[in-house]
Amino acid sequence: MSIRPIYLDCHATTPVDERVLAMMIPYFTQNFGNPSSIQHQYGWEAEAAVRKAREILADAINAAPEEIVFTSGATEANNLAIKGVAEAYCQKGQHIVTVVSEHNAVIDPCKYLEGLGFEVTMLPVQKDGLLDLNKLEKSLRSDTILVSVMAANNEIGVLQPLGEIGTICREREVYFHSDAAQAIGKISLDVQAMKIDLMSLTAHKIYGPKGIGALYVRRRNPRVQLSPQQHGGGHERGMRSGTLYTPQIVGFGKAVEIALQEQVTEGNRQLGLRQKLWEKISQMDGIHQNGHPTQRLTGNLNVSVEGVNGSALHLGLQRVMAVSSGSACSSRSTKPSHVLTALGNSENLAYASVRFGIGRFNTVEEINIVAENFVSVVNSLRKQSIQDKG
Ligand SMILES: *Cc1c(COP(=O)(O)O)cnc(C)c1O
Image 1 (cartoon, rainbow, N blue to C red):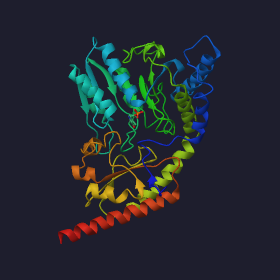
Image 2: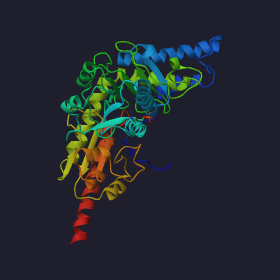
Image 3: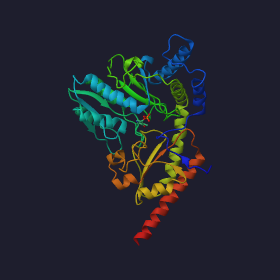
Image 4: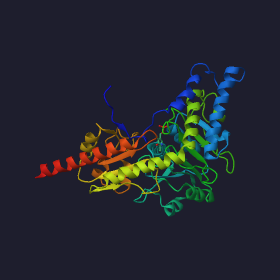
């Protein structure tokens, strides 16, 4: 096999940690029971494994195990939260508030609801990517039923002030949903302290398997009603039918457990790598960071480069590093990132942007190689464009 580029796209996905995989394997073969089979040992074994994972997840966010609903990922969790609340509370009101920099898995369900007659307010973000809390307060109305603001942005890593947002929503008796796909295991999340009513999670951004996620749904103070979006056998307290995917759930639990154990040490290590990378590449002129400089995920660095063509830049980098321009989930489209343009970048500058997603398995040697190559690719593209003009 040829040498592959250095993987620095951990916001798109991450490899499964070997420790996670080892936990999962028996649940494909020996312990294959259906967790809903309550009359024999095969079912009990699977149910015990699912229960353990549910407890780990609940503990991670200061929730109760019954408040965790397993889904196929954060996309499904976001859909269930937003459409489920909209359908359950449409008699009370039909206004939803969210933010322009959200993931498409939040924006698109909101747009879908708009088509059904709901009204959606898309709040802008400030130049640093943070939500203006005054604007949030002003947007709330007597018919507002839901506010959806992500915990950590998947492109620019910015961390929204969840506690403040939760306080505003609770005072106004509006449910607060947060897409925490990028945040779980990387920052502290506490649904009580932050007054979060619904929260979307996924495993594959934290070295767990793809195809498994969860939605936290608050049961008391206040209780959240959800209209299920998938009907069937009544699994997950009726909120999400379908046989539970035991191996993935076990892997999800283990991935969260490891991420929490290593959160502080790993966060500091990644911060060191990010600072090193920025230090080296910012010696060039005409390069700026996107998103708040400190209120962000430690492993995220997003930069825009002046004076280069975006596609030439990415073409130049891809032999040495696997990075992306926008979000992986929308990067098949040719439009510039809606997050980067929301920060005030021109379309050209948004194309000429690079998202570095540093993760658990990246080393300082890799960062040195990436920094060096990045500088040389940018310099040669700039030289070339001067020659072309001359
Ligand atoms: C990756 C991601 C999603 C989608 O999660 P899946 O589990 O892949 O469906 C949603 N929101 C954010 C912020 C993400 O980073």
